[in-house]
Amino acid sequence: MGDLNLTIVDQMLMAQLLERAAEDGRAPEEIAKDALFRGLMWTPAERLAHADRIRAASRDPADGDRLEDSTLMIRRLRDGT
Image 1 (spheres, rainbow, N blue to C red):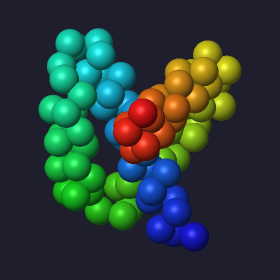
Image 2 (cartoon, rainbow, N blue to C red):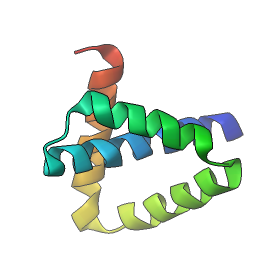
Image 3 (cartoon, helix red, strand yellow):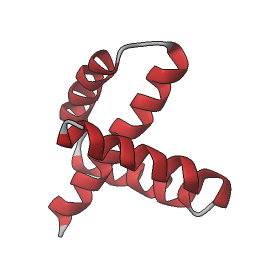
């Protein structure tokens, strides 16, 4: 179960980084490299703390749609569509 939570955290981190890339005009590939680096550098405790912050933010209806859109973006990148 813990591994599943970390996978979800990784997806949420990537979604946040991709959103920032769109805002900054950076290429998604560049952001993906940043996400990989950050994910490898985080301890499990840091990942779980970040997941808790994301869950708290997703309870706000205003953030819910954006989080959902980000998850869809992650799936598309993963599936190559």
